[in-house]
Image (tube, rainbow, N blue to C red; front, side, top):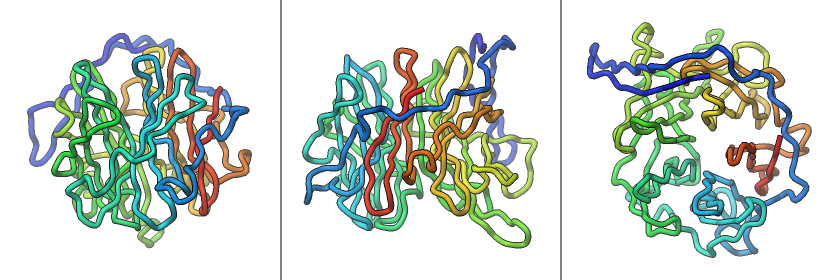
Length: 347
């Protein structure tokens, strides 16, 4: 297990580079890399769409869920049809299964300074002084869920929310692994600040053809606003010249060989554990786990994928992994291209 871990950002610069240093103590006895398969909850779907004619009447995605003050808090994404304006709603529950929701969304694109954009709820952090930090994706209006990453803050989960005037994380420069767009941030606290895992998309030349692929990157911050992407100084190719992914798609003919995205990272028994969404060229994707000793070097778990679309009978989209009281819960947006609901899986 990891006995201690601190995340530091070196002030040393080499051209444009920053160095992320992870200092840790290791005990080689750790998690077994085999992961038990998740099973659907008998009450599925645990979160339904809203009534006909409401803002969330066609699609709902769980978004981030946190357990605070004796109840579960969900910041979900909803919309009445596609394409249409996307909004972020708030729901709460005492058991994480039966939910109550606010009738109106707590954050809409009209509440932000971003013109001709859309927003999707991705990650929530509650600070020691009671401030709620909501990280969300910013995409092209009615076109895309990803683009850059924004931040809204509040002293209450129901708002009002104050949106930072500029995105807090942007895509990389032209030609880099995350140049096209970024999204799906997963943010959590450490002793020294905040860590963010995010999905980046860039064009790769494969067999003489340019293909867009998704990988998972890492960034750190001391204030939640100014972020430094992880950069391995040993890589000098243009694709990795400014930053590097920490978890990449499989290069073999596997279930995750087109995109890896939507990372949910937690510390479990002193090690890092990631739930991620793997996609092939022709599938909406499945979900699997990976583990790491340092948060940078990851190993895929045996038994992946742990949640398979073909076994659920649905298309699977975005997921939220909640670990509370030593129980793993995965809330997944599932359904079809015409409608989705939220389903709970347990192991």
